[in-house]
Length: 147
Image (cartoon, rainbow, N blue to C red; front, side, top):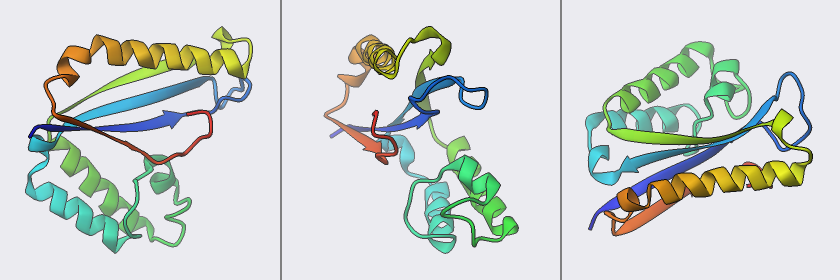
């Protein structure tokens, strides 16, 4: 049985335009489960458990030492980041991004609609690719109410 994992994560927020948050986007990373069988996965999982338990890695928080990494030493955060980079470098994955510039939308509702439309286009454009799999498993950390 062929399985594909789709990891979804957003960048930005649905709030008004601001200099520090000019876009709102949804990234979808596609990973064939068969390509996920290597020693780097064990190394990554070990590093995640060592430095904070079982959770999604949020690179911005990891780099800046924010929650859940505020009590993790900088050297240990670097080790976790390098484990993630080593893992990602050893697997075959692809990704797509649905992005909306906040200057293109007039309200949070239109922003959400634009993001939904662009995400649907990505999925429609990749329907043939996804149909090769018996199971599509979506991973999302429920980070934002909008999504």
